[in-house]
Image 1 (tube, rainbow, N blue to C red):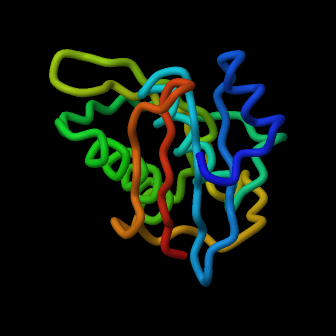
Image 2 (cartoon, rainbow, N blue to C red):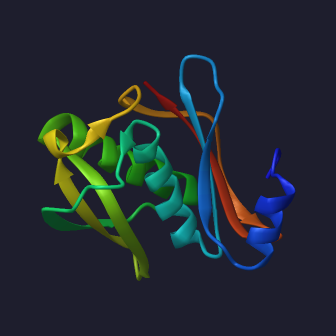
Length: 151
């Protein structure tokens, strides 16, 4: 991805997954990468949460499964991130870990959740996902994505 450091490129060559926040005017921009589409989606969601919360000492108190049936990869990315934001805004729960697996009609995601009061908030809480500049797709090392999050 544009702006990758030599360390990140080397890690990706070895099959590592990851994410980072990059500077963006008044919003948060998340870049993520993985060896598969599903691992890239997971990293994007973790990057979203880590942009506003410190998860180092947090344990999940609940687990939920959701099925996302969008057919286009960019729709899957936005649907997953919207689910994370929805649980935060409506239920007061933060996604602290997740897994995604391909199923016949989309992906199934396991969300590990903790209460908002159990999480240290370190940044602006996301309000939604922007379609402007959204990207997800295969690249030379697996999959990568980039998304801007409204805060």
